[in-house]
Length: 485
Length: 68
Image (cartoon, rainbow over all chains, first blue to last red; front, top):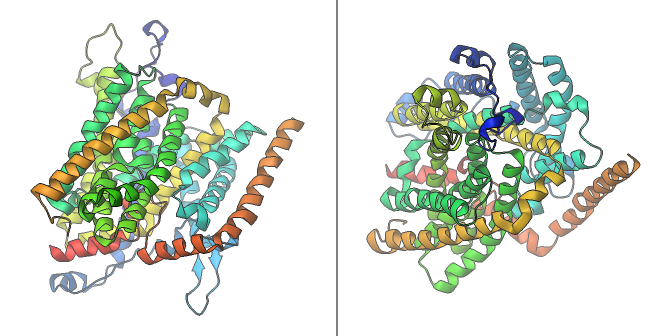
């Protein structure tokens, strides 16, 4: 996302002040993008090694003989987020054993995540020549705010209605910045972009290409053909018809509406250096419409009498949030749930391609000065957000391990489920707290003027609903009938 | 500054009232309880941001693995 120094796309050429250029080697040692890759790379290395060393000696033989094997990361008990609670918020950290269930302990894992992120980022700040002591002093408070956001999101009623932690993390930060003001002492730990980029590189390991063919051609048709068409059409509509002044806002809304909600918004915002307010607005829009679509779409599918697999594919391709897709699919039945969740999973994988294409388009065309020729390869490389390369590299590496190693799928799933997924969640939660702490409500107001973002979302989602319905019917109802079973 | 502190305290009180009293009471209503139980049975986390956060995906992926 943008910082005051990289508003190049919006600034008139006369205002652009050339910064001294850093060599790639210098960038690797100092810039946030590269350090996000180093930090996430180290986490992925340790997480994979932890699973690797815990694999039983007979693992390969058992897999080859077709025996059922389960793997778990030894780091799992040391890394956690606050859990679900209904009556008492402390249940988010510890629930005593009962007749029906064993004890649930997350406080140890929450503290583990605090130590891992705190130590890693303090060292990174020190090596980057930033204030490590300042970060170390402020980080516990920012982490505490993120923990509060997780606890607010973990309440049963809130959780049941798809109100994700990102929303509460934003609100926690906004409440402080817009009432008592963000204390100056917290500033060294407000590392929005560093947290987001590190989280995104970790997310890369979850973008497993082998999942692409889970539903064969029909799944690809719904998730990978319609989605880019809707994304590009919505972006062009926003620019040519609605004339939205901010291209990055236009792109973030288009991506979160067409790809997969909050996670796509985060990846795209970082790729096109959108302002933090633009990301907040896009997420707010997405979550508001998701709650409505989660309830209304299954009713519409029943009223239209669509087959379960067609309905499931329609849900998976249109509802932004993954959790909401599953809820809506489950109200229709088991087949609809499976098709909906699988289509969404295939669409989730599109995040990597979207982030790469948006970053390339931005540095090549959007950030180019109007009086300049298309930049050459060297210029594109210099401007390219390098963390996207880390994201893609993590995806390619872990997709390869997942597909080619004996039992690779089990090992990668144990690694993700036992450690990297949890840390990625913490990084995003910390980033949203930081966005809230840096945002004044007054900065958000201009974006609501004329209601253009809302119109963009509604028009784009309408096109998405129409095209996805046609494609879902064509694929699951006509060309590959019964593919969802 | 006094107004800002008052606004902050008001928000804290509102959050405490909503999360400490209102939502726990709502959670005991039959509608919410049955919805929560249904979600648990289906192993669905409605707040999942990515497919790896959905517990029910294990079932789908295991099915896909066995069909290979």
